[in-house]
Amino acid sequence: MGEEGETDAADGECGRDGSGSSGGKGGKKARLIWTPALHARFLAAVQQLGIANAVPKTILRMMGVGSMTRENVASHLQKYRLYLKR
Image (tube, rainbow, N blue to C red; front, side, top):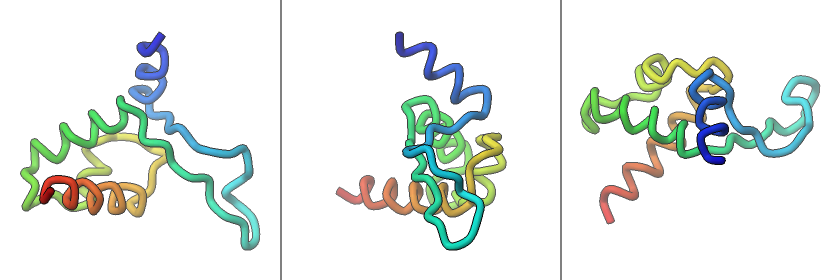
């Protein structure tokens, strides 16, 4: 059951919350859902770079997920760094 969702994320698809369009005037962008497969790709990229050298643009490039933005990765990296400090 969990494998099906992982293959979708591995193919470059991101989970998005809501069915609204992200394009258009003044609308909110759909919220990215960090699936376990996406988080695993994120962790692999961060571990390869090292936490001190991990920057969103490079992580995004290493993850190879086209529908994600640098801002999505930057936010997740910020939360991950706070998690590591605990």
